[in-house]
Image (cartoon, rainbow, N blue to C red; front, side):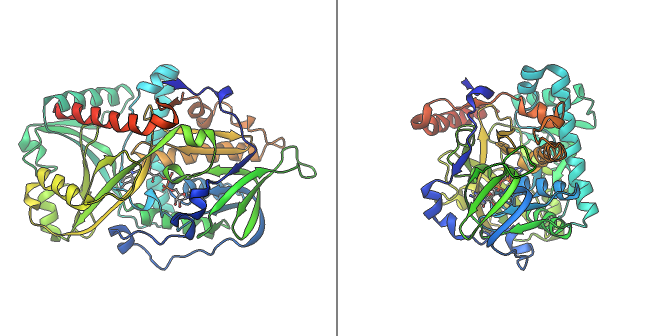
Length: 474
Ligand SMILES: Cc1cc2nc3c(=O)[nH]c(=O)nc-3n(C[C@H](O)[C@H](O)[C@H](O)COP(=O)(O)OP(=O)(O)OC[C@H]3O[C@@H](n4cnc5c(N)ncnc54)[C@H](O)[C@@H]3O)c2cc1C
């Protein structure tokens, strides 16, 4: 693996979208894909396209969990913010995911211990605690009805998975999180998920699940209520730094859209797996991976309770584990199967995922699948999410590696803090943020995927196969 040190991260003053993204279907403003989320969210919520010109403090590109949470925190701090979204609010992974709020990062603490030692790793762990609290408080403060439930279960099919779950419990305890419990044996496990496949697992009070599209729509409404601006159907074609304005030391950014240009002091790129800009950092650090979800027909309250009695998030405790939960209208929403080709549509994904579901939850045999969909998430080589700068006053966050529902909120908070510090610093250097969460996260070492441009994807497919083989050892 090659480490991307800051001196190798060339800052680009002028960035453009790839030609493919300009001409592809992505460029035409998409409706939400057909999913249980889209069917149960507010279909009337629309924002206009950006036309003409405007001047703001901060421009956020991408209206998903990352972009909206960053914009919301900045409007709360009094900044003038505009969100530019190519399609609709939460059109990307944010409006399609399993809704699981993990309690920690998918890489656990190993990369943070390696980069910072115990103190730094403990701070990252604390950020994830605070991130969960922020979701709860935000939903309460803005009255966002997003079906929020707390609690997470790492279900284990065999003794290796149980051993790993015990290690995870010890790791949690080493950071002071002791509200966890190992369930031993199938009978105990069935109190959480009625499946003959599991021999136990780790039960958490933290984590949980929610309706991510409703949560995003709630954040969007709150942004606008506080004077922020959101534009949909607005594909950003690129940006560049222009000459310094009178009385300002730093040059603002000119952000180019099809029907107008926006000028902003600071810029946030929040496009994750759907990003198509020609920029070395944005391209090298992440790879898009497909994930697929099905939602059963409604099983009725009793039917859903008989399968998931405690209404918790459940994930099989392995590399490429399945994730599932109940919905507010008593369905099972089941996700699985990483596809490393970078495609969000694969043939028969509904039957493949439904088969995996019935394998784990045999009582769902014969149950109708009402919805099936897929989307792209972004992974990093270390499975540690990335937060950083593309240049002075330009920030990005991505690569949540499957745990973005929580980690987007952690990254957004760190970016908003940093931007707010820089905004109030007359030199706009960002120095105000030294010692901040952002400063710590920015130092997490990034690795490039091996194989160069040609071989990165095939190597990733190979890595996926290796993980699948590891997973055979239950
Ligand atoms: C099927 C699936 C299931 C998942 N399940 C879970 C789960 O249960 N738990 C969990 O923690 N994580 C899950 N994830 C991952 C999680 O959803 C993501 O990590 C998270 O949503 C990323 O949010 P984001 O805002 O960074 O990116 P996205 O939500 O992907 O948003 C990026 C946005 O940028 C916009 N955009 C791109 N380019 C431009 C441009 N040039 N101009 C303007 N806008 C642009 C796109 O239209 C898009 O709306 C899942 C992902 C998928 C696909």
